[in-house]
Amino acid sequence: MNKITSGCDFSGVKPAMMDLPYPPLQVREKNQLYAELLSISYCGMVSEMSAIMQYINNENRMFCDRCSMGKTILGMAMAEMMHMQKLGQLIHLLGGNVCYVTKQSGGRQWMWSPQCLTLPEKAGEMLQADLESEQAAISQYNMHIRMIKDDYVNAVLERIIQDEQYHIMLLRSMMDSM
Image 1 (spheres, rainbow, N blue to C red):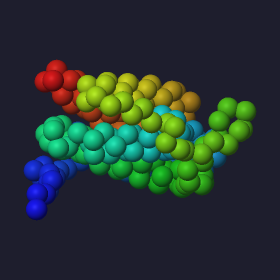
Image 2: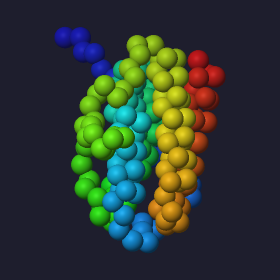
Image 3: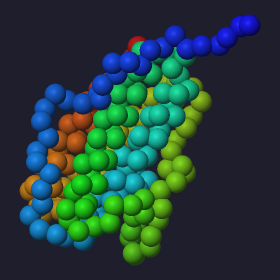
């Protein structure tokens, strides 16, 4: 019998993150507005949840033909999982509810769904979509930093941005190598 197998070994893949410590997870005081802002980056249209799912989908579709890229993308997904976990803890510390629902402008609730993802077929288009998602995440984090007046929360967001900038560098490098 013929078997179709993968020659791509994902053992040893580590989160693709800057080799810098994260600030302690703490807040000045409970603040529901801040928790709601962070929930957008937790599970909104542009969010860690969206990044994780988009990266995993892209990695699953390219690992056979592009093992090295698949490993890098999996490492980025792992980093996004850690970001999501940190945001969840901050939301909880701020007195918010950690779930998959965000409040949109006007107070309307919105639940995360796969419609948040951009899932092109070609590897180059996948990387471009991932790059654009990272840029949008950085822009959103910078907006949150301007709105949040808690230096503890902002220090964590600034550290997350450093990882997102690293992901942009990795994505551009993969795009250049194609």
